[in-house]
View 1: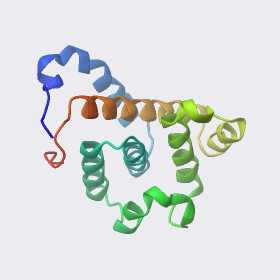
View 2: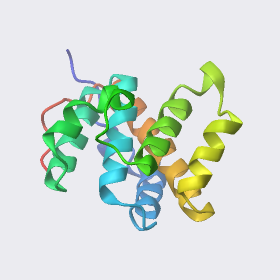
View 3: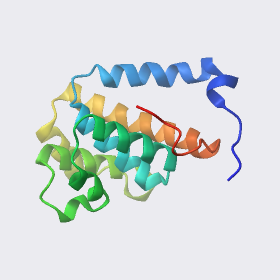
View 4: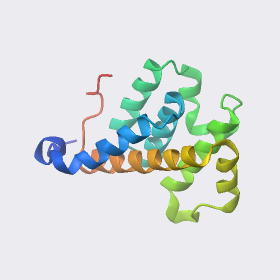
Length: 149
């Protein structure tokens, strides 16, 4: 696949807003492991090879188990994830595929049961951010395998 332009180099000011959003999410108090699962799951749905590679590496570095990484795409079929993680993963899928069904009241209540209001906003912002990064990486064909944690 032919690589396209380097958006970070061409328009660093355009990326600054996303970097600020990442900083907010990173400092929000949400668990690093949870954030990496959310980023990885959205990237799987979007088919973003660069981000799947990146967030798998980051999750491993943060101590995530191989078992949980391998089964993430089928998380509903396992007992490896906490109720909090399940609520976050369900919201991740619903928001990533928002045009399919929106966000149901049931999904909203599940998240609200496991996340306080500030955490709920931070989780939502994390999902928005990774979906944005996925679209940039796919649109400009960022090369998978080049990321080093």
